Image (cartoon, rainbow, N blue to C red; front, side, top):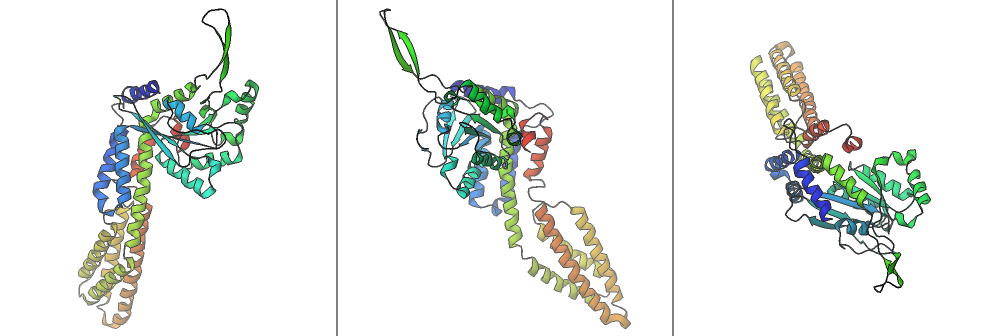
Length: 417
């Protein structure tokens, strides 16, 4: 495991250096987290502030989170023990013993990269709702998912893989305990994983065979006197080299992008939740009613067309600024045009109201126009804010789109986004 982590450490700080034209995604994402926290600190919950700080720490420490999923007794914990090179979690033969999500941290001595290995309960130990929550909790933390199985994929396992894919994380399908099968059986199981149904979930390049906890083998040793032989049961070394190499290859080619994208996905959720809370507490009806009364009184009593238009424009501008606040919108130019149009039409209505022959009818027309225009205007801005979640200067979606556009077409990220 030490060698495994040293490879990852060297990879991150030598092989994956951004070109002069590219961004350092870790630094750019950290800066966005910092700026968003400063800008919206008063609107964030304590839990969201802690999450943003945890994401910033994860990026600064280059912590690669690997979540391990699978049914009971497929060897999830023993696979983690084999990757780490020592016993971190208890393992069981007859029944799974991982009662809850467990997280293990492994730091390279004097290194700048660490692994966080996340062990989960067996999928068949928990009910559907609990399983979904467990998958969501672990997948949110993970940069890479190892889905461990020990035979033909069951319907439960296929459903779990499909659910995990919704979180847009790279998934490696780990065929473990292959030493329990003959060569022919192993090949038959591997061939079954090439079916169209499975290919929709996992490509053949993401299927790895391992033996995390090999069965003891009887080995004949020559005695010290060189005259007799003695049979001794020995436990072979775990066969996880292919899995280690696959993890190294993925992180070597897109490790920084993975860390950044996973942080941005979480930030998008936080930004969306913050926007929804803001929209829920905006007193849109009371605010619109107040502006309506103020604007109606002013327009009905102004003697000049230009003054009526100015009053309408000022009132609607104040309303727009208050509603938008510091939240992004996609159509600022459109709303400026609408404000100008409302102000112009209001001014024309005001000039018509000076005609004594149609004074009463024109007053009704002004009131109706103000009511319809203000309601539509307010609804439109709030809808625009809702559709602009996680966009704008501090929006995580913008940076994420830029990142995804910069990666290679052969990247595993292209297949999951």
